[in-house]
Amino acid sequence: MPRTSSRRLAAAAALALAGCLALTSCGSAAGKTTAGAAVVSQPSSNSPYQGTPLSRHFDKPDLVLNDTSGQPFDLRQRTAGRTTLLFFGYTDCPDVCPTTMGDIGVAMQKLPADEQKKIDVVFVSTDPARDTPKVLRTWLDSFNTSFIGLTGDLDKVKAAAKSLGILVEDPIVNKDGTVSSSHGAQVLAFLPSDDKAHVLYLSNSSIDVFSHDLPLLAKGVPA
Image (cartoon, rainbow, N blue to C red; front, side, top):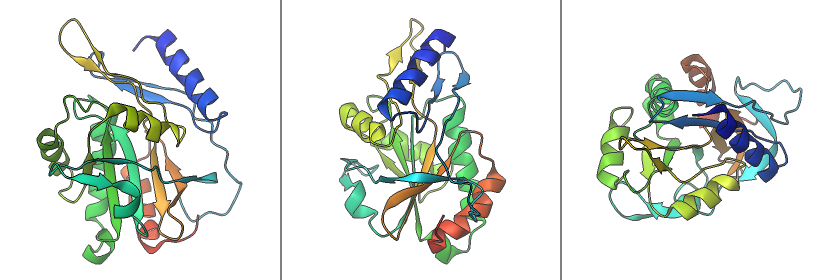
């Protein structure tokens, strides 16, 4: 997407959360990812995690959308007391969305079955008009059949993302019919001890990073 637009989105994200998190965006029309500078307030700790430990622990969003079976899914209630990885994106994304979900999927497969069952990976669509429950389920199954997909009211999605310092904008339909959706590309990890986000993963986090951290997250190890 154009640099001026990227700067505008990054600035808005910084204002929304006083500079705690910045924006990474992707658009299907351009087929490019534009990364804004991620400014994260973190302690110089001896954290066991390779992801970024957050000094501000975000509450899990109060969000109810439809899951891929078409049934209402209350994010807070259904994932209470469980390790939860939360990501906002869309299925037609050409780059960061499939890469991120694919990396998490590979890392999940390396875990013992009992540890995999302790982690909920939740993907919230930023393009609900096109990401129907069926489309979302098919796409997620290519990464991991246990991944949870949520789709529905975009205003609810935008508000939930904003509460985490992640900016989501309305999708834009281009002249050629393709869609561009600008959204933050951070993955937030919520620990089961308090259902708050303690660890952040940027869009360039590797499979090795997730492979290292998922066992710790499954056990609820403090960040």
